[in-house]
Image 1 (cartoon, rainbow, N blue to C red):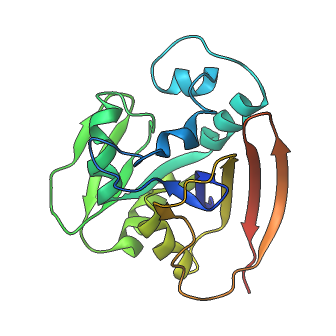
Image 2 (cartoon, rainbow, N blue to C red):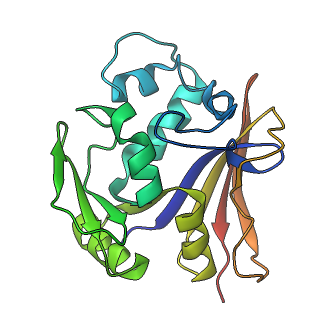
Length: 206
């Protein structure tokens, strides 16, 4: 069975979106700067249906982050804010389970992405995602609230963060609410590049 993982770009002061995120501004005010390191990478452009781009260690790390993902879990806010920007060919290419209070029929897009709405809580979304993923990983895509719920429940196995060299000052912090408990991490590796720092950890469990 695969791992339950988180992979996020984050500011040095801990934010994964800027303030006032919405469908019109999915990453919030200034949040687009968190992802500047991605936009000209060959692997990012390919996953978004574009050609060209740079091939470098950042591109390899981005590509590797998706290699073993068999399913994705996200919150309804992330879906609502970003679904228009993703368009008809979202970058996931695997089943996506959306944790929500609102029932809805599955939404199918190109590239094997189907959004299934789960109204019975994040635990049940994970059950369904693991069944879909088989031996592959389940990625908890966001937003911050759903990631924090998984952390608080002790369900995250690995986390990769890409530290952008900016201070956003406000927005949604990744680790702001994780139940007040201490979490021990084992560093797996760290990679520096000119525009971002990549850190990967395994969550140490008793």
